[in-house]
Image (cartoon, rainbow, N blue to C red; front, top):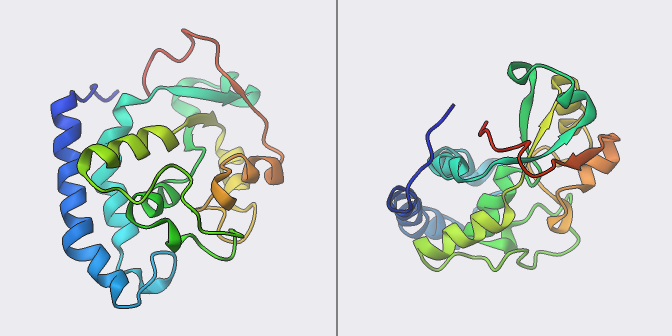
Amino acid sequence: MKGFRSGEQRIRIASEAFDVIESEVRPLLAGGSRLWSKGSGGYPTRLRQMLSGLDDAHDVTFATNAAMQSPRRQRVVEHVIPMKRIVIEIVDPRQADPRSNTRNDPIAGGPATSPEHLILIYDRLLQKCWVTREEHDRLNRAGASLQWDAPDGDGWARYRRAEVVAYRLPQGDHAVRD
C-alpha cells in the first residue's frame, strides 16, 4: 500500500511534470509531432510515470461484482479514463486520438497552464475501478485506441463496449487505498 502524498509532494510532482511539458513536450508538438501516434517520443509514457504519484490521493471508488468477490490481491486497479487520455488533456486536448474521438475539445479544462492547474485537471479526471484480470483484458481489447483513450472524454464507453459493469462503492468500502 502506498502512502498518501501531502499537498507539498503533489505540487512537486506536478511541477516536475509541468516543466517537462513546457520545455520538451509542447515544443515537440509545435514541430508537428502527435501525442497519440508513434511520433510521440515516448512522452505519454514518461508523463504517466511522472504523474503516478498523484494517484495516491484517489481511492478506488468503483468496482465490478466479480472483482469484489475476488481477494484484493487478485483485483486490478483500472483507470476509468485511461492515463494517456488524462496526459493528453493536461498537455493539449487537441491531441486526442482521432480514431476514437469525434472532436478534440477539452474535457476537463485543459491544457494545463500551471502545476496547480495540472493537479485540478488530474483530480477531475481520475477515477479508479477494481476489475478482474479477465475484465481488464476485455477493456483493453474493446476497440481501436480505447486501451489508452476515452471517446470524447467518456471513460465508461469502453466499459459499455466490453460489457463490463461497474458500480460505485458505498462510502467506506473504498477507504483502503490500492
